[in-house]
Image (cartoon, rainbow, N blue to C red; front, side, top):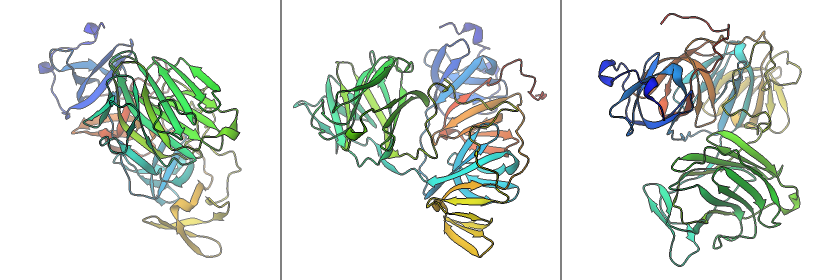
Length: 460
């Protein structure tokens, strides 16, 4: 790894205006080099990383950095609803709805910021019930079943570790639409078999549910009952030896679709051609088939709402999160329905109301309709079709970054400061805002083509 041209000098020569705690992270450079360590600070044109591979904390210019991956922890929010606001530049922001007025839509986000979003830049607002987290762990071996007389899996500091070939499994009350996610790494070539929705957690070869077999960068999916192979992919490039990857599976019983994400990137979507054999078991198995040590941590099982978080088209899916839309391009998040003449509130039961928001108190929203005032739970809403206005799109600026958060939000803004784990940015979508860095999974730099003439030049 040739990092010498990227080094700016010793840390002693750089004033650390924005010091951070030790933040585990991985830098990916524009030449595809990678370097893991702890993020120490960021200025307007450089960041500082501490790494065991370097003699001391070392600065790097931002213009040679493609992205930074961070060890984010998902936040639990005690709320019954989740609002997703789609913006005209392609951003999507999740949070709890605080207010709706003729000029702003206000959200409380899971990443610290209370955002007042400009209605001129909002294309759509969707409401869903909050993702119900059914399990987060592991917190020990209690509840887990091992199939061997001599256990092959151990637990240490929030991780399950395999010592040799064998399985560990437990039962969950899986909903019809669900999400299963976990961190995985291996001390050798990555090899793991994952069984979902099985009816027998005592077996490492259950005859029901689905099976995903990970072998290095290749993943094969099949129906364990019919033994029908659903397909395979060789695109899981993040599954490398000695590297940790976030693996996520989303399943819809309604559509018989099984989707695989690795590090938030869509890898493949498989459809079971035999919907009459839909799985109904409760088992989740981690099976090692070789004597390579595998580490499993940060397991989450939760509800998934495909309406609020639809699966993208795998053929059009980019390696990176979606770029902001170019001027003149249609926003795919925008509703194709005729624009309402006033705010219209679509309900989950199929009804709809026309009116305006009088107040939002806790989880209750009060609407002024032509007939009477109506108060109902926010989660009873499905969509808010805003009164039509001449939509605008925020300007692209030098210093813009794209961030991805643990709740699925994607935002673009100009990076201003980073201090004590708090990141401040600016966007025409919401003005100035401060975010909690611990909720960020990824920060992308240099997100626009260098030849773009849309960038607003600013003196730094």
